[in-house]
Length: 70
Image 1 (cartoon, rainbow, N blue to C red):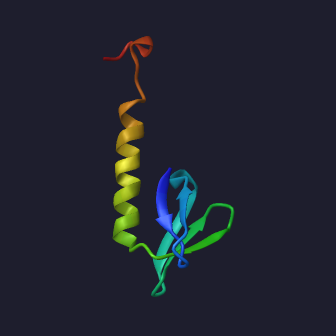
Image 2 (cartoon, one colour):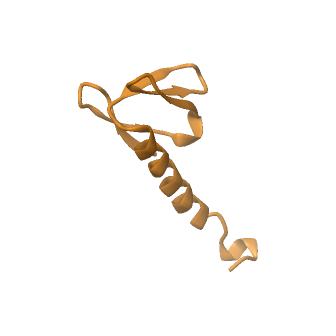
Image 3 (spheres, rainbow, N blue to C red):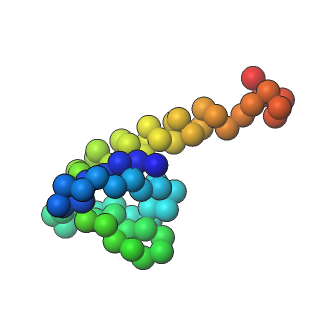
């Protein structure tokens, strides 16, 4: 999960696998695959950086000794 702030300052956690689009209108609008839209304070670049970091962390844990991989 990644952290973003709504316009009112409330911090929420979003599953980045559910994000369909991110756009600046000029506020940052995150649209989820279910059509729900979140308007947040965070800049697009910051949200994208958090998604990349999240995926790096998730990717590190994708193989275990049980999978026959190092």
